[in-house]
Length: 597
Image (cartoon, rainbow, N blue to C red):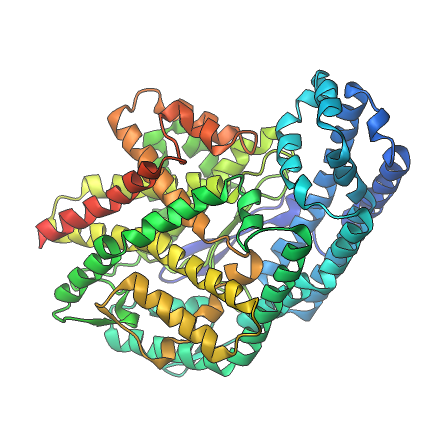
């Protein structure tokens, strides 16, 4: 592995840039070209050996066949992950854009050769498959087969599945790329500068209200100027989903996501219903408090994430952020901190803000035979430290789950947010315990409440926007003004009367990438936050032995469902009281803020 690269900032110190050579040494890599040919040959041989024959395989033979399929998936995953990470780091370079598209097309072509396998597995009779599962070689893959067969009722004829698979790169994937490259290329004027999306959003948390206002107005104007294109992309992808959902006989737009998350529609409905019912006691109440702290009855939307008047707004250099997060992890579990430390030492993090780079943050698991990578846009705010704690939680989870292999390491989105939100909570609690000054404690509590409201209330409001858009799209295309009105309705309902909006806020829906990349992803954040709040309450009541059970839960990857994972902690997400328990943690913080004045 090459030495990790850094970029030095006068304010932030040395910021790491990731080293992707553990995957490939560049887009012209000879090894990458050879792996593409090797994967194609393996996929063709796999199809020739097994298509139409799975019913005749005994359990041992079928287990060996699944293992062979898993090796091909790992190869393709490594190639696709490398292309995605290269692209995320610079979406503005047309050479990189061409490379990314070509890799998508090549891997889709190769995976078409193996597409028959999961379709044919799902056609096996339950009794026949159960008999084969008595063989240890196949029994290892029981959780994967269980989850695969969730989609049996929604599976189409083989030729239809092949058509949808092959057309993906020229359909949804192409529209998603158009969205990403458009958003990344946008520049937002502010005080003589042309800022990226990540930079202008950072200005929205400035200590200076005038800067926040100008930033908000700039975002609104630029998004509105591109509103017709963003509306077209949104409408096209919603219609594309409606068509496929219809063919697959999903009852509701959210149903496919719920199947993928391994939860029932009723569980997702219970979460969303519980959060919406608590809007007045959570977000409405908190923003009334915040308006009072600013000496007003109402605050403008650009003040929603503003630092409090007592906030020192200090800049936290990267090396301090690393220490803060790893120390918090270490207090909980030395093993957790040791795994987290690898990301900093080994070039697995890309932290600087750069033109063309994907905005926001993510943890990419790549494949179990390699390791995850983290992308951040670190700018030294306390929220950036919390984002580091969040994404590192994802990364540690992905490392621990890698032992389950390429087919079973990934968790459903609802459980994927567990370790990330728990990592944030560990970091916050560690900092809060050290703080005794009432004013500083209030600032820290308020910042945490805002993060939790952004994770729970805001994400459910985003879910409601998405639900209404997909429901209305079934009646016809939504003009930009209608999308804007749905957005304002959902934001007003969730944030309450203490927030004031103007016309420049109407197009803020356009920069939410989850709507485009992963329809109905967003409720998973609220699921994860409430789940972690309940988990943390168990931890506080009985710390002894908790860490071992927690790490075992992360190691399980995608092999267990949420009921099985939570049972050792005495929790049940299907119980409506579970969600209220998690929401009660947020309410308790707001209660303390009211007492602090």
